[in-house]
Length: 245
Image 1 (spheres, rainbow, N blue to C red):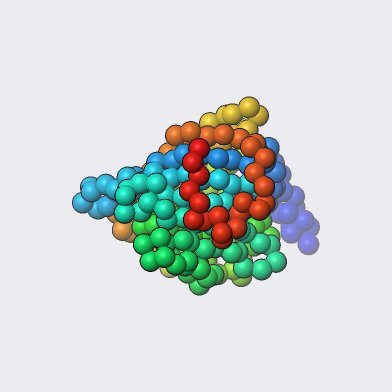
Image 2: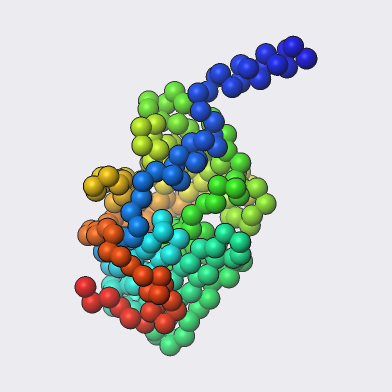
């Protein structure tokens, strides 16, 4: 019994903070009420061929409500996406496909699908609810970063685990490895942030699908914070209305 108590004391003193506490600090850091941005997304396939898209995004409540409109290339003009996340039921996701003049509802079973051919799945576009994951601090001695392991509990996910590098000073996720259900590395993500006022806002995301040798680079070209976006904006009927400014 004494050995067990000593071991518990050793474990709790080995790390000054727990994995769960790091996840909570990441979620609780200061964030704007809403964000509007103009973005560029570049897809690169295994042969080096690139596809460049231009899009506008509006979001609020830490991106739990988000709308995206595609402006370029011409074939994708007018395609739009709506996401509303829920805690007590499945998230609502819908796309407007003007070429077919119809909406496409993204069910929970389709969240592993690619978003517009990119290396981001619909699951990647959603926040991770803290209570849906187990967290373990793997290392806190990595040049100013925490190395955090997060594993889904009972939720339906394309991933078996994530390993995330989190800055110690601001609790920003700047790098992440995501593993498939067989435990093999699937995606590598690198994230850059820009400080605007008191907020740290993502301004570049690079995602590489290791297994497909395909990558996605998302850059934020213009960004505006705290516009006072209303909840009523985030509605299916708005999907057909491309922002003019």
